[in-house]
Image (cartoon, rainbow, N blue to C red; front, side, top):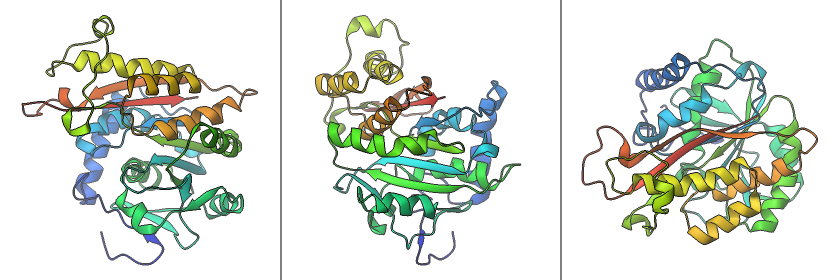
Length: 314
């Protein structure tokens, strides 16, 4: 990956969560994207935002590919990434400082949109994201391999700047405030929002073993895990509220069910931003869903499961 230098965020999770060899990584990404193209995926110039998972590439890459295969990169000038902070306690939303010039990937460096980041800092609403916290977090980094493949190695190579941010400790009021602050960006031509989130983390290791109702489970496919269908029913209830852009309903669902959706706050910031865009409404549609415990080749016993879902906002 080469030596690091000040001002470049290193791809710390390369070599473990995804390949650090550029040729192998590109082959894997092309295979995943190619599978979507073969099923009819085409660039969507109306795409405003996507929800994408952030597990290791072997687990959730095929789900993420479903939305990245639909990016019309020729129209892009800015990608705003919102991910949860899994480990560090951050106040509000945090963004990199002006000393950070780019995010490195095994496929090349992705530059940051310094002008937009400077404007966000000027608002005084965004805290500083320390480099060591940024590098330790995987939620934004796991979106970068697909972006690097499409932006740096695709047939069309536009000049695109990243606006990465981690969403930390927020409540409903601050989610609404950040949504209102970010809504003008969401409405700008050439801007794509990428919301990073996995869905249900089920199992004793996650401290969550609740499942959806039996009646909901009958609607969904069975899998090798005894509760695959019930977990899917639980996730689908939340996904339906997101599609309805019902932020308050989604909050009540999370409080009632306790579903361990790690990107709940980034999702709610997006929903709040969409609520201010009434003059140009955006539809939200989930297009693919999978569970780690149902993936081929996963060895038994399958005592835990993580769900992956992706959505298109257009």
